[in-house]
Image 1 (cartoon, rainbow, N blue to C red):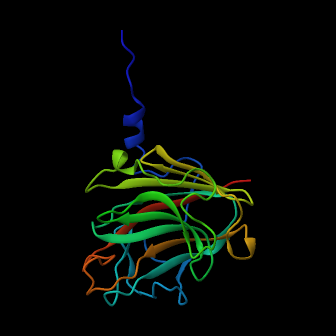
Image 2 (image 1 turned 90 degrees about the vertical axis):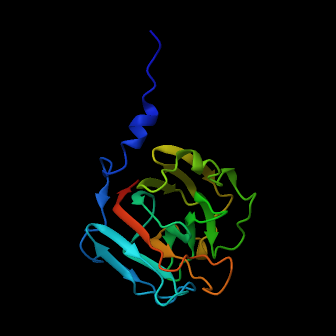
Length: 225
């Protein structure tokens, strides 16, 4: 008898429940434990809300984005969340973020030519396409993305020189180690943040579709040694 391949189906089933060992950091009701940055270069949109267990954000006014940060800082950790953005919206998941939003970013650029799951140095000096060892592009994300549905992202960061791994719907798409700590002052801890990208509403290649939303749910963290 031929073996039954079950791993892909098990991976899809991860969506909709927080993995064992993770602690929720979004209470599904309000922004307790989080705060809006007033000093982020993407803006300070106040349009963050909790609706039916989902954390939602849009630009307000159009063009004005921003980031929502955890009150707590983390060092080595895994973060799990589920996303369902409108197509045409650019955002991200920030790891070890400063109040200004300087961070290792897991991209959620869900738009034409965009990428989901790859690593970008948000306002971090010295990170380029060939920095570090391994693959930080997340280039295979479309193979595992579920259009029009909830998708899970699991990101792990550890080490003074960060080693970052990302899984999309249970499939690993990033395994990358930086060649130095590019965080400001070589910080080894920071906040977790969610981003709504700023845009120019009049531009043809705007980073946000008018009236679009990013949606997050089941946000949880596991602290590592």
